[in-house]
Image (cartoon, rainbow, N blue to C red; front, side):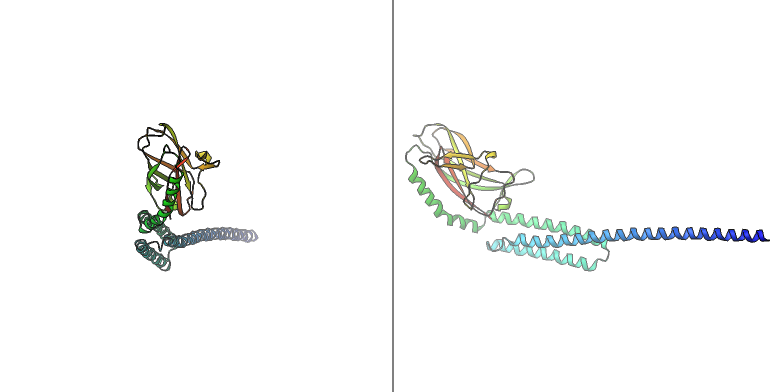
Length: 299
């Protein structure tokens, strides 16, 4: 009888021990699962916060980048009004998503999609703005305002022509170009998008000067008065005729002159160069003599 009681007691202890182990295992599993869920929820929340911050920053930056061109002319202002309207619509759509979408994961995905659409919209309107700036009335007015300066420089040029053998250049045109992803160049009027400046002109007929090799120097003078250039990219100095001063030039090119009219283009591109907005003066020297002057304005 006593043995039976002892056996029953041992069995009861085993059952209690097994239950205790099972309970402990269950608690560990539930704790681990809850921790995993909490971590997943936190990561999802962090990602959502990041997406909202990115969208809000992009909205602010887009408004600022577009509206910096306001007030240049009526055509541009009309385009900016249209652009701001489109951005306002997307902003309202984003705000509606944030208030109505209850699923954080879905909201995160939709906000990221809206961010990409906003970037695409911004770039589309920047392209349209750039196209207007290339051929807008304000730029034409600026060039007309500069004509008196260029005319004065031209008169000074005529006064410095000491002999009939000095080569002159006329019909000079300066263009700014941006480089597209396909490595092709298109004209631009935006300073921040400019990659290359090009000056094209005609060297006039001169039967007196000695034919043969001539060196053409181009000087690009930024709005602040500094001559642009980099010695590692071909820039250096030359001595101007009639002066003891060495002038820094941006780029030079050797030509073979045969006493006849000759069309010539000189372009200059410097990697990582960031152009500032303003008016750039371009001076052309041939064998140390000032031959032509022109200007261009970048916004």
